[in-house]
Image (cartoon, rainbow, N blue to C red; front, side, top):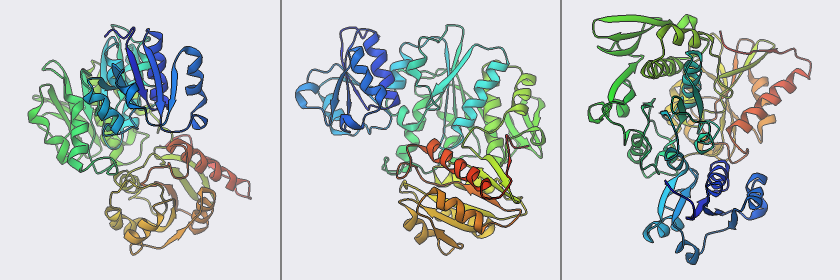
Length: 465
């Protein structure tokens, strides 16, 4: 793809847009960076691009500018139905996202991992597996480093493991992963999509350009994902925690097993894993299937999985104070993710004090009700959607409201008994009160740490065993 001299509008002045604008201007494109926010609210890194020759435009771009644009690069947080994007498309400009832009320059092979839940853990684990197997690998995408920032470090003999969201997959054209893994599809981002089918269709785009020489890794237990198996061009490998498969990876008792033809082998046992919960067994099965597809040896995969610790903000054990354990699952930004977090503690003797709330995604909270009745001592409700959660779940168990995270942590600790668990699994996005789910998780951990300064002696946990 030749970009020198092309007039490009990059929409969205956050991480992805900043990386795209820098990438394009360095290759000779005429670039303007646009965001609806006033310039005073732009990140410093976006404003600094002016010194590199990137134009800056706040507010909706005028039609006269859109008439001149050859290429529009859309950041994932910007809906493709936005009027400026639709206008540019009708005027003949090519409209793509940052992942698609990067893919046109990326060298080597790509692993793409998506799903409603578990993406970051699985992507990180696959990256570690390939690195430990001696493969040249880099990891990024929705997980942190924009894919376009990894182009220069990609190698013809290497792999790039990329976490991709539904938003990023909306705008792909030629993006072609050698291995594409879909973990699950459950209701999420219903504030952006018209239906679950529309959301699933965006996820399905990950297979769009695969060929019979590629590999698709699918969750056999997910009704939507498993339904795609017969329609893909790539070779399909499935995984399951609910049943044995004639071919694929599955859980039998405590053993994670790989079966191919008439042979099978135990890859690892649950007792060897540091990760908590059945959903993390799914993640490990998916990661192992992906690692095998990339050519890694089973024994190497096992060693990596045995040593792998929880990713920050994903069922991360923070501390134990006076017999109460604190877990940070700030990444549980959907109802399904919060359900999986609660299910991970189903075998615990104590109850859960659950911190819920934030900016809702127009998905019902009612699926949480049975788990709350069984496991939750009290709910602590925070954020914009606290009233909606109260309406839908108030009859399922006791609850209190808290005005902010410090108050929520104090109330949760006061409600907990020795042997209980305080769990941050909000089932909501974070943007009503925090910059990101990472920011929310850090504030939670800071407040837990502050409890130790009030006369308690916390035991900080570095991992789950």
